[in-house]
Amino acid sequence: MTVKPFASAADLTEKSEQLEVLADGVYALTAEGDPNVGAVEGEEFLVCIEARATPVAARRWLDRLREHTDKPVRHLVLTHYHAVRVLGASAFDAENVIAHDRTRFLVGERGSQDWASEYGRMPRLFEEPASIPGLTWPTLTFDRSLTIPLGGDRGDLVLTHVGRGHTEGDLVAWLPRERVLFAGDLVEAQAALYTGDAFHREWSSTTLDAVDAIGAATLIGGRGTVALGETAVRAAVAQTRRFLTVLLDQVGGVRSRGGTLREAFAASHAALAPDFAGWPIFEHCLPFDVARCWEELDGVERPTIWTAERDREVWAQLQG
Ligand SMILES: [Zn+2]
Image (cartoon, rainbow, N blue to C red):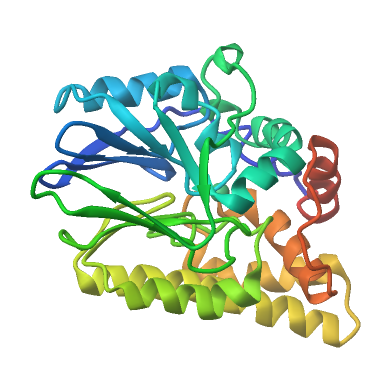
């Protein structure tokens, strides 16, 4: 049996990036399954959404954005604490770095370990890692919801925590006027899910119900293409839910008949592969997903912290 290369460590091919103008002053940059970023123009300022893994990677995105607008970045919104989305924050010179209360807590609790873990899993995303000045600390946080008035006749950008899901501190960013939703990693349009820090049962039920109820006409997920139109948005949410419910069913089934973690991985892989194996990061994520789903069903309330060492152990146990 051949050993699969660890996580995305062997994925060294540069992805092509696509800047899409989704409405007047509403931007998304997608990159063939690499983490998406976005921006929203206020009358006199910019709100940027997600920061990428390093300041150098963030600056490449800002260079693209500067072809459309030269407004200063007032707010940088982070949908959750994961390193590949936050460690480039210093490049934005934002007045405020906004996140959910629990995201700030998680940065303190496990930010360093997560940085080492994600660097090992996805080295290509860490362009010039020495440019990272340190952990990214949110400067403005909230529990339920925070509204950013955009000025002029641009309406509001509404940040909401709709429940635990991909992490315990996810937020979504919603433009009611344009019906555009930046969903972070709570929804993936055409990419596999990472659930290693997730709350599968809550995410697959009430949290995705809440995302669905928003009624977006355009959705930018954490990775993958932009979902354009209500049908595509519904499909992206449904696909995300299906991944979670299949994982819960398979891992739960193996557990209830007294099986092993390795058997749960094999069963989940077999059940998910027909729909998801062709999508980015499927093989990379699945061992971590199954390990977390297993411990959640074991009654472990909060995800065990991933370290570079634990990553390799679980990989060797399940993908080795
Ligand atoms: Zn994430």
